[in-house]
Image 1 (tube, helix red, strand yellow):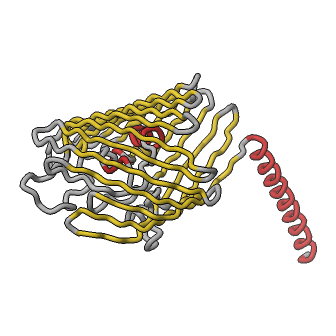
Image 2 (cartoon, helix red, strand yellow; image 1 turned 30 degrees about the horizontal axis):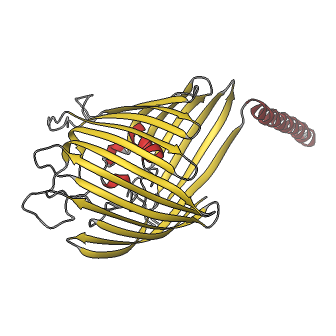
Image 3 (cartoon, one colour; image 1 turned 45 degrees about the vertical axis):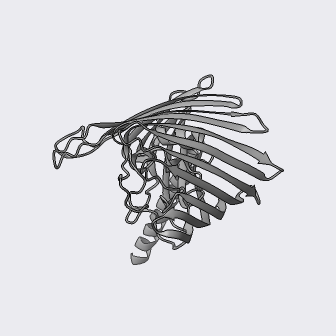
Amino acid sequence: MSTAYTSINFNRESQVKKITLAALVFGAFGATAHAQSSVTIYGMVDAGIVSEHGGKAGAVEKITSGVGGQSRLGFKGVEDLGNGLSTIFVLESGFKIDDGTQDTSGSLFNRQALVGLSSKELGTVTLGRQNTPWYNTLTSVADPFGANYAGSAKNLLPAGGSNTRTSNTLQYSTPVVSGFSGDAAYSAGEQAGDNKAGRQWGADAQFKQGPLTVRAAYSVRNADVAATGVGHGNGKNTLIAANYDFQVVKAFLAYGADKGFNSAPLPTTAAFAPAATAAVGSTDSRDLLVGATAPIGVNGTLLASYIKKDDRMTLNQDADQYAIGYSYALSKRTSAYVMYAHIRNKNGAGYTVGNNNETGSGNTAYNVGLHHVF
């Protein structure tokens, strides 16, 4: 009896295993037939020697991570749901190659963390932490330095904090139709007691056809603090940018307007010795950028720009930045670079020459570095 029972139990177990295996095989086949998915690991490693001058700290020499783009490690994935619809996600973490620490302490995916649905016909909706339409306009259309190196437009244009990227964001991106496309984003302030405090919204519209790209962006940030009842109203930023590739040279032009509380804060307020007139962030200013890139030989690229900050407040703290640089492609993924920028501050203005990762300590900076993407 005991032997027969064991035999019957074994046969049933074997049948169950066969059914389970068949189900797994069929399930895997079905998933392959109806939904293709992929995950890509990507990143950037950038470090440079930075020499800064003109601030109260004197001459500063250091090795800095992220001079030509923040060093990062990212994961992005897509799953084809069929009928032109896909699920997408991005998780991107910044780090410092000079000391191995996180770019933002205590935040793992501080650069981007989003998930969404993308339709070839209807566009893309994403939720999470992501770049603002205003910042994407600055980096991809307006600035020949791409907001990187000593010549970064972030030195004078208001690209700090929530103008760069925002958390708790819902964003919609249209499909491209006859060269036209656009984005709209809303970021919840999530402050208890006041659903308007800290919220932000922005949008952009772009036309791209052949060598011409034109994009306009607008951003509104509410600076109220619900916990204290302090009300500052809205800071507003407008940026209109264009570039045109003439082959022998690519020309860049941008114009910005900044209005309201914290619309154009200083990147740092402690770089220069105290002056008779203290440096303050402008609440009413205009920005002008003119720039170019040009191929030099087979692998080289020359970069140059001029930026003017026109402060329209009583102090009239204007500033001008002059920048030039050279990048040499050692391969498709690796490049070496040499960059220089100088800011001329007026009437006690306190703008500094930084780079993609740092605000800088003076009004002049030199960069020599290496940049690799994977």
